[in-house]
Image 1: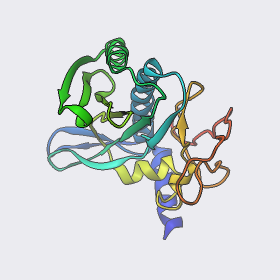
Image 2: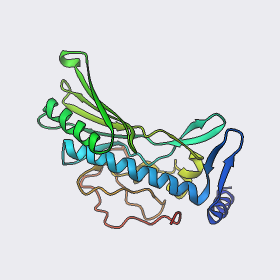
Image 3: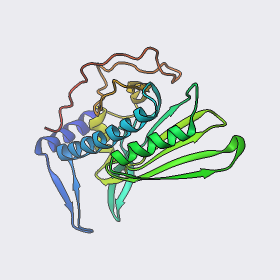
Image 4: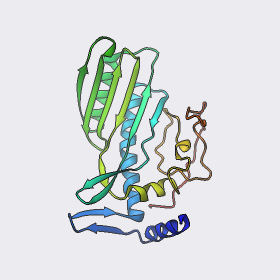
Length: 230
């Protein structure tokens, strides 16, 4: 069955087709065009978010949700779509809340976004949020919890037309649930590069079997090139 699905996918990729959903007037990319669309969106938003976390702390951030896994959503009425989920966390030795807010706000503005700050709770439960909208990111949030000594940064770039399952098969060169999480890096640091292709064979293992990040992380200088897109 998997071989049949893969041959069908490759035929669609070779055609590089784009299907128009006439029911609601939305253009839905498929095949090669879908991969290019996803890669462009991922690269744009993840690069912007990398600049944000590096502005806050130029070191290694723990990867909670890598951000390249297509998630099914509804782009419009009757139109299937895909979304991304991106989360990074940090427990700095010293936490300067005002500096984090200032650095995050400046980085969001540099990315063409409009940031706003909100404070929730007090004491040990105090939570300071910098919420920014616009640009390629769509919505980015920096959450500082002084009582816990943590910073969490997340992004939700929105829902875009296209089949999440088809795109996922291309990103992971196979079924996403066959150890895909083991292919993601455990940290994002200053040498990070956007990567949107994780083949089943030849990928370094970034996490241990229990899910904890491997230390030190593999030093990738050349990522595998996807057989999709230009």
